[in-house]
Amino acid sequence: MNKALICFFIVINIITFLVFGYDKWLAKNNRKRISEFNLLLLAGVGGNIGGLLGMNFFKHKTNKFSFILVFYSILILQIVLLYFGIQMFKS
Image (cartoon, rainbow, N blue to C red; front, side, top):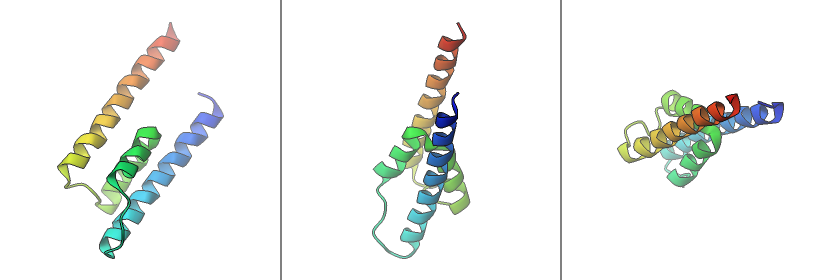
């Protein structure tokens, strides 16, 4: 993996973690929230680790089944794609 890609994943995961925390703060303060679509989009572009950490650290979206289902579906899809991508480059 090149350094730019590693930096991207570090940055997107930090941003995702912070956005989950910010959305939890918004929820507690009855403010306009960040849409679930945008939270899932951040996870979908590589922020799954930050999202998982944010969900558990801030106790955010952990009881919303529909969100959890889509979030983990994205995570599983990314793991499968990563596995096949690694297999392609090994041969």
